[in-house]
Length: 72
Image 1 (tube, rainbow, N blue to C red):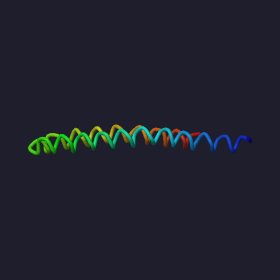
Image 2 (image 1 turned 180 degrees about the vertical axis):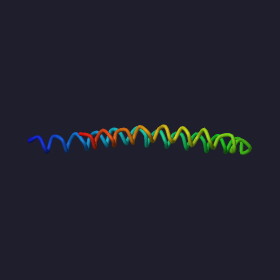
Image 3 (image 1 turned 90 degrees about the vertical axis):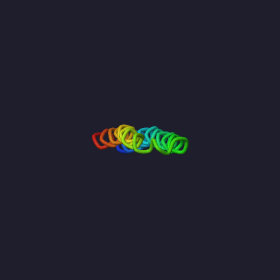
Image 4 (image 1 turned 180 degrees about the horizontal axis):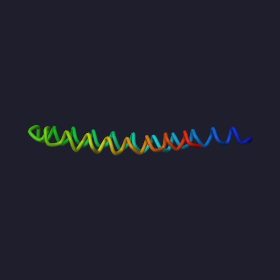
């Protein structure tokens, strides 16, 4: 493999691994929030902001991997 192919492969792997974990995390956060709201509908207002914050922090990991792949 030449150096251009290796850099392209590394960028692809960085995005793939850096995108899988946040996607799974966001799915679990949404799943558990909907489960909690289903059990206690009055708690929807209290759960919404922490749910969004958790999703934003999980998405930040994906953005970090995107930045790393751009810098490679």
